[in-house]
Image (cartoon, rainbow, N blue to C red):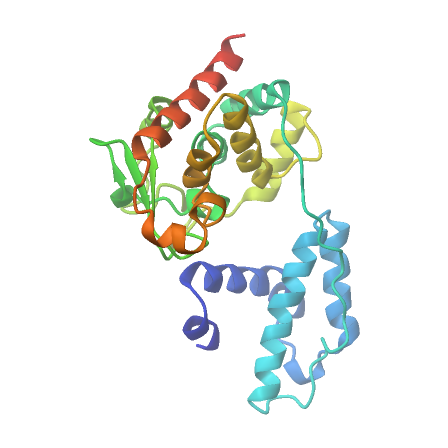
Length: 281
């Protein structure tokens, strides 16, 4: 209830996923009063060892909130997270995938197919965030106008966002089987949530493509960088990314209501044509 009342739906779901996957699965039915600092550190160390130091930081933030709530409600006297530092230093990533790497990743995702392969390709074609793409719903896609509306509850900044869909993006969506009334990427065996099997299929993509040391978020950065290289204006790239900064920061963002949809569409089509050119090279 605490998480539901104080967070957006996307944050609530992600927090619940982290707690269930990393902590509840390890501690099972243990009494929360018996869990100590070493128990927390053991879980965090395991997350780091599986190659996700930033994931360990997110896990610490989630379990710390949980234990702080327990203290506030009088369930425990003190939090076992008290004094625990972030497992990893947060680093700003700068990885931009080259044309050769993009070609290899696309070919690998072609081989993997739906759902993960199509999801990765839409991440590249739309330049949107992972949670926004995996949360795509059929009712948010207007095929007639080729527009995808990301509702505010899914967007990171809480503001709804219009994304023009390129011809290639529409082709990707046309290949998706209608397995769920609402979700385009539903979870297998669970009608209430979306696809979440990223780790194994990402590893398979790495193996097939032979591209290493990249993340799904690097696709978004790479798309933005390459669009700039292709001549798409910076303010148009910002609109595509739904960034409330630069040309759209502060008062300018409030009064500049023009959506730049034609320019966004041209930018995304130019980017899609570039990707198609890589596949045929």
